[in-house]
Image (cartoon, rainbow, N blue to C red; front, side, top):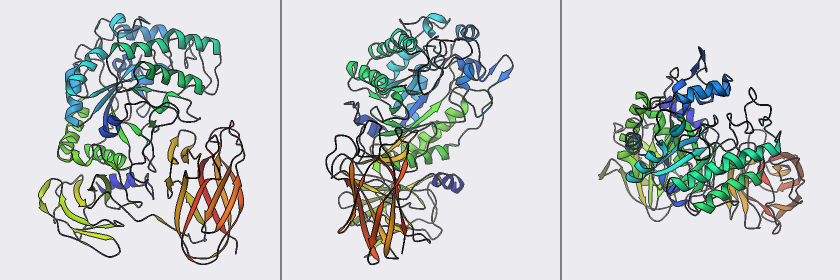
Length: 590
């Protein structure tokens, strides 16, 4: 267990966001995001003709570690050959209610299934293209209809995945370089703009409209692979919200390397957060190595790791979308079922510490586990039981009224609180849950904690970055495929970034800021200050979105040692956000 947790800690961060800072993206915002924040845990399903191929075609195998649902592209199967495989797809053992029941048993609150993956095959009855499971195969049924109805009965939000740019079957979609000379093959720009527009108008947009009108209320549409332009991304997001205003759109609807679109952000595949994201966000992850079913892939993550990943993600303010890959017959592999049932057993006991909770208010890593909270209850997720049976929690300013195990609410745990805001909890000698024992602290009011204090390193350099910052106003910690983790949305002096540091060696420091701007933004003025000392800087336009540059903005003087507060914010009220902030480095000159 300690090995699993140690591997997760490598990916985590130093200072966490203030609670309650999650925001939807500004460009296209749905009215239905409350359920998403409450849900925390969802089931992803990758299923299609590739599931029947199971990672192999004509004796050739997609290696374990590659994505089996990409078999058409990986092995460059000609369209007419892949269509033969699709025509034979007949998942006679598919049972929508069994699938939804498993999601429910695992503690999942929403379900997302591939309506059309990159192979271009529709997993529902489509009037736009007869290349679909109901019209093209002997199965003749509509799995999406059956799943949507089963989800509705079970009280689970139903969502669909749709690959809006990538389509290896359509001659004008993106990605098929082995069959079509008219296929779009350039990730940065369209090879044939007028033909790609034809694909969007003939197939992609009409199929999204079908999904929005034929399957009742959708919780979300999960787009993938991005779009060439922001306008194209907005076109899809606006279509969704014009038909179903409460349907969420994920962040992959727009261009991966430009300003974020959608109602919430998706990390990269199997991505774990290195820092809290102050918007709604989700991490899509696999149970083994691949998304679509492969008969060769037996690298299953144990239930213990899934539970801890869930807790880490929720403690950072995100949702965990966990994938299963059913077989070509419509069977969920037995290891997937076993793992999810074990996860469900833990969730049944500990759901209070997951659903509807806010991210950890503590700026530091806790060492022994993670933390969530709701109202006046703090949930301490203890992965590693202290050998001395004493759990220490530093920096909590609130009064503590009670401590107890979530699994045994009637029995209080002894605790003490020192003047320097350290809480010590006496634990039972035996850890009740070897995966994750949850301890509850009932406190006065919402958590109030001490800020993160940055220490100078051995070379007297001070690093002010995303990880150890806190934000004010509309400024938010965010994620982008190209830009990575950064801070932006600063358009007012109240939209700022703040750091607390302990200066050991006073003197003059060179200040170097790393940031990017949009090519469309005009040069903007920003202010960096501590006490009465102020530096004013002007942004220089970078080559492209998220192309970071460094700029020396002048010296900063700390006349004496001690704790300091440093703030960065716009000088006025620019019409665009000032910059995408990455970091500030202060190097001592004397």
